Image (cartoon, rainbow, N blue to C red):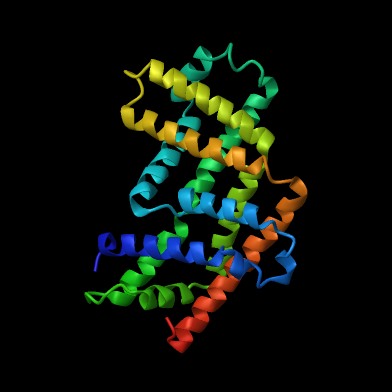
Length: 251
């Protein structure tokens, strides 16, 4: 069985599991998280479902978008002409410009790293299935997740909390959005230099990061620590439940 057969099933499984574990009914199992606002939790869950574990067809677009953005922000030869053309409109950032660019690279990398769990799941399922053509049902996915080591799960959780932390720095995120928007405008004005795929990718990344900025501006800094704690509790609890389901054969 090859990765092309497994990847869509893994993506669907991870998306559905994320939707279920961030439902209010599940979150209220944790007394430590009683103070979390239900409406805010639902909004955050919808953001994750739309942009971190979106439907399969959108997943490839988002991955490509942030890969394009990461390459652009790390390529002085491609970035310099844009910044030079936009020097007048970016003067307000001043000494904050390097930090805004660094924030952009950090967010782009964090989005790309969110696919690590999916890649690992695909690899484990492929190895478990071998050459068999058995149905890729929930039980197969549960057994694969249950086989993840503690170190792997902790790494996946760090990746998710790192992404949320990157997005929570709204001052830097605002500067990043400004830079990306101006770069997009300049790229559109020089379409002969920047391929359509690159321009479309940067446009999609801008759309997602702008949405994140709008969302995270509504979250008080005092509440963000509780959100991070909640993510760690919920993700670890999810893996524990996968292990129990695999042992009990209840999937």
